[in-house]
Structure formats: C-alpha cells, structure tokens
Length: 158
Image (tube, rainbow, N blue to C red; front, side, top):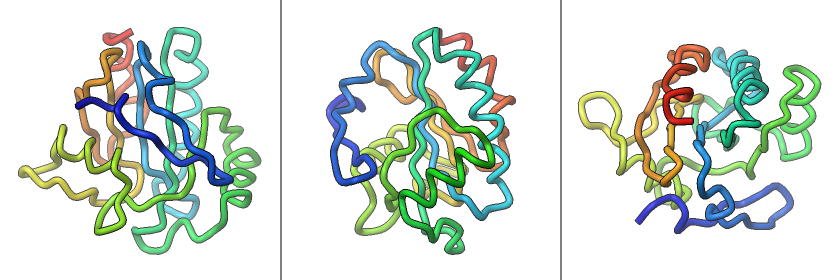
C-alpha cells in the first residue's frame, strides 16, 4: 500500500484522491496557526515557490490536537495563511493526526516512518513527511527541523 491508495478531505467537505499526486515529490505537514513553529509557513512557501514547477507539492493539514493551536474554521485558517505568509500551496481540511479519529493517510505515514525511538505518534505541529515520486515515505522530520533544512533532501528526489 502507498499513499496513492488514500483519499484526503478538502475544505468544504470534498475529497481528493491522492493518486492525483502520482509522479510528484510531496512534503506532507500538519500545521497550526497559533504555534511557536507557525513561522515555518514562510519556509514552506519558499520551498513551494522554488520547486513547484519541478513536480513538487506541499500538502498542509491543519490540526488542533496540540495545545489547541488551530482553533479556527477552514475559512479563518486559509485567510490567516494567505494574509500572514502568502501561502499558495494547498491547505487540506482540518484533521486529527493521532488517536481514534486520526486521518487514515496520517496513520499510513506514521507506520512508514516512525519518530524518535520508534514512536509512531505525532509529537507536535509541523511534523513533516517527505514522499518520493513512487508514493513511498522516505523521511520524517520533527517540528524543530525547519523547511529550509530539508531543501537538499527534496532536490535529490526531483
């Protein structure tokens, strides 16, 4: 099973088949608007601008499971990202990444690349998963790893 076997929720209730992203390198991130790591949106947008014409996409999944740091609704989140960070990459619907209601794609990501000491649980906002053009999860980066620190990993896959 790879990421192309999943569907993800879009704002407004529609779904997107992940097979739409076949042949692209993906960076999948859980995000929040009121987090100490929120300025990473700037680095993410920089990666998007640099690599989007080279079969690279960022998929951001807002999540309110860590300190209640994404309390807003979909329109509020989109407006915040646009006004404060000029985000042009897609924001998916707000989801859970841990627990009984965790999004199935995120369950798959966690199984493919565990965190520190083998933990599968997402520890905080702005955990990032790098997926190659074949839909395989090749790396997991914790919240403290800034987007610019993984630029060379992305470039190697393109």
